Image 1 (tube, rainbow, N blue to C red):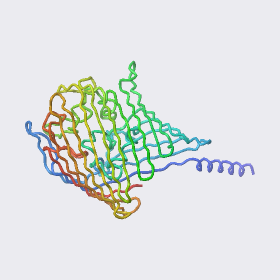
Image 2: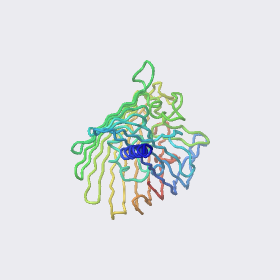
Image 3: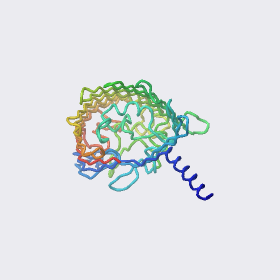
Image 4: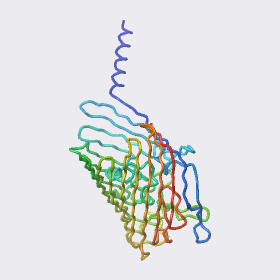
Length: 405
């Protein structure tokens, strides 16, 4: 009888714990055929070399292949423990993304109640949470339609390490958040610090969001926070390329010596029946160029100031068929009297839901650049996710299958 009683008690206890705790496995698989009319392969002397390219691609060109675990534990009195760990990978090769970090997309733990949540770890900042879903990425099933080289980070190209974040649960449609990342430098509390603020308000068909992001010593603290990066002597933002390798992020890679990166962004969407119109404006700034944050071979000084404006339209022709389009304009001021640069981009897409979890989509992106870019060359087109063009124009197309679980 004692053994039976013990079994019943322990069994009941185990059942209670399971009932109060949940762990969910989730992820996405995205693979498709991508064509780009001009992708850099290197240099011939000072001349950039580029060729058309057709490939089976995933990762940054698609939805972002990932798997993760998220969970909650009820602690009683309305208080819960929450966590998430999320890993990015290339489905066609199996290689880890985010510089080889095992849980490079997210890894955090925190507490939540009716007032809000506090989380600690590697996570998305409050600026992203306030503005991203109001941009074309709110419905666009891939990252190639985001702003040139993702200069304002709305596609989450970079996350934030060592951070603590507070987000409210919401009050009459309003949610606010704040995040602080500790620099961890002995004797200098602010050297590598990152902080951000964000607010979202939604009522009926209307949504508005605004956010602010600030990273000190950004080449190391923000752009260099993955295992294969991190030193001030390397350019963690991008690459100047070589005779056998393409450039990376020419829109702003030359500004690795900025003492501070600052981004201000705001967006609004309004739904008219099955059609949603959105406007997003962001202002990325790379301030105090010439600091010790990173290399500065072009001897830049002052501030590189970008203004980005996006207009997007998405419409459900049927419950399962979505059409999307966007126009993006990016302008940079003159740095060291280089005259600045401009980028024009058009996005077109269609998404057909085969089920609640599986989509077939097609995307087309066209970009044109003018002026001189951050690498001191005539500005080349650089659609996010592709190798930059060897000329001032670039066009890409993607047909892919996306499954979420």
